[in-house]
Length: 174
Image (cartoon, one colour):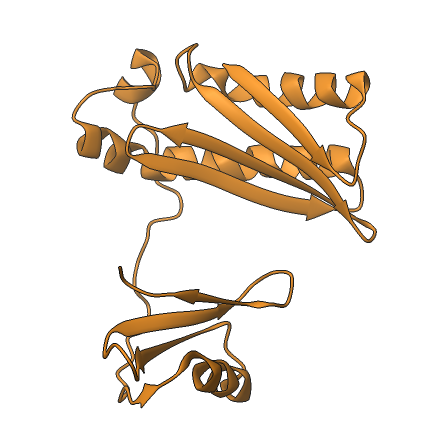
């Protein structure tokens, strides 16, 4: 695998680069040699954050973790990436109908799905037309992290959500 390691508000020392590369090399058993891994290490206040992105054919596998030190964050993100890969392995292979960037041994191996996806609750609610600012206020009043609404101008469904940095995001169709 090829690693691109960058930093925000942190100097990437050779020791830190080596630790990140060695820990992430644990994932090499899942991917072919030409897979590119983008790693961003950052410090925000006293939190150390690592973001790992694996762009694959047709999809992106991404994980972000934060901890009190960078070494702990690296360990956490490895665990998250492995869980994502094992859980979504069959879906990714079926979508691509070939092994693509996965190693043949990983693609053919059977792993137990320890965290099956199941819908545990279903909800219906009326969707009224509003603008994004109103939707943000409604979301805050409800105490949710996202809110689905019908855009007053376009009549399309849209979603507002609260980002990790405390700001708001908007998802709308093209």
